[in-house]
Image (tube, rainbow, N blue to C red; front, side):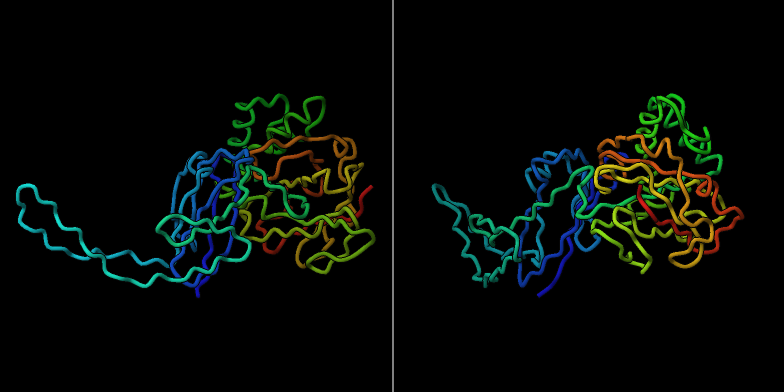
Length: 337
């Protein structure tokens, strides 16, 4: 019995979606990995088995039709045959196959086996791969904008080329405001750098996420810090997730559906060092006007599509105040209003 991990990645520009499933097999087994027909994902897609690429650059059509992944199957060795001397009106003799034991396939619970002729039963893995999958729980996301000139030039050029009107990034334009706020911020969210591994845009912002508490009353987040309903848990930024020798300006993107559908503002705790730190500010108040404006994030971005409120304040500008960053940076939601 062996356990394998099948991973499918959507490699569309600006998208970093991954779907992973673990399967346990007891013998030679084939699985069909399909894209859900209702998905709006475009691709191309890669399929990995235990971190080793199995298929690359698969099209949407190929993934909807399904690709076959064979697990624990040895490559068959042909049995040599003797080719008789050809004679008029004769037919080459049919080779007698060598009898081999057919392994018994035990489908993994939850997968639907599909019988194919003369083949081991083929269970079907049908991950729902979309450009912006709906998470099982809602999360807020921290966007770290690097403040070096190369990063700001690249971001600003992208926004200009994509149709931004008055805002080209915090480091380029300062505070966004006015009638173009929502449309400019929606373009900002589309920048491919937010998926990480692009110069000093080092980390996919989906890794900088804090789960939003849905239960009523107070509790604690995964780090043991106090957490109220409709606030997000502690988000850590380590020295490996950003470039520690430069400053970053941070914004928090909160899905409106994750906070009960309404939001006036959400105060923040910010600090360095250990979880729950408030060494920068305790219960800081983001800009109230823009916290009330809906920003619609389209599909194909690093974070799930939907309506967001973007939180920013002076204490999230150009951190750390003195470089290099030598310890973990923390941001946590405190109180919703």
